[in-house]
Length: 418
Image 1 (cartoon, helix red, strand yellow):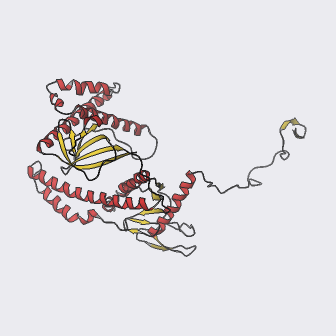
Image 2 (tube, rainbow, N blue to C red):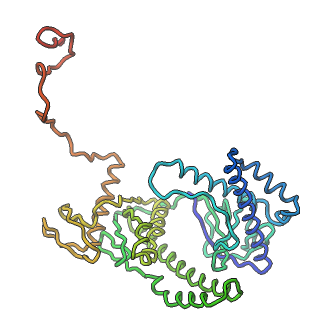
Image 3 (cartoon, rainbow, N blue to C red):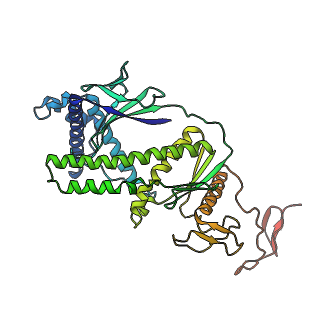
């Protein structure tokens, strides 16, 4: 399986200038090739192939006075920018032809030097790791890397990223074998929420740290300082970076906490089941800030890939399963309940339920049922006897008899069996 490892990079002043030039050249190649394909499409011409774009906007462009500075950066970064454009078009065409539900992929857009994220991508032969634990990038030099852990195998590609806070990262893609953990007998269902970040079917409550809510005071102050600066000035750029760093700190804290919690859940349980939440729809409600602060989507993605990495089972049940309205004791489905109702009693069996814990238990039961269904277990109610009579139907002719029907004779069919 392929995994991505990110490490902080600390380039010096000359290396930052070289990386900025590489980011700009890759962006220009992307925009030139995208403009060529859009122009051909508007004129009714065939789709421009990547080989023709590479010759026109990379190889020949380096020989022109207008684009001669493309030769100052690594050619691999320019070629990979064109490959990324091909991938973006492929994803758009696949999404446009698909009839499945879900968010559609928009067509590729032009890139700007003011985008919050700048990056270049290099293949295996275009970078190397030196003996003194530095990263060599062509036309840039040896970059100082903060190695927080060792790579499990030789990387297959490298992406150098500059985020909105002005930080540089080296992102390696590594092809490794799964690390199978010893078997665990427990299985757990998760109910994600806002009162608690997650309620487990065994009764464990995971409180939500609410990093965004805790940092709101600093974020408001930074946003107020930015609004008072003249747009386009150096003070504005300095204040913008300060605000971006505050947001990056919140993002890093949330990601680190997600990793720790998801790793603990995967290590302690053989199977994990969660509900397929409509996060994008919930983010358009009055609870949008709390939903974004929780980061359910990123957390579920971590559970999924860590389960595949460590040999665990990950299951996701449908979002329309009534986990909050079904009694986990007798299976009775009660009516809908507003969010302020946290405890309720089943009208059939009288069992008292805590809303989130009951939903987690139902999630575990539904996930196990789906897993058995996928494995081929019998899920039907068994043999159902046919009704002797149906409304609106009348028997015509003699009753059926075993054997092979023959030709019609007087008084009905002839049975050819002995």
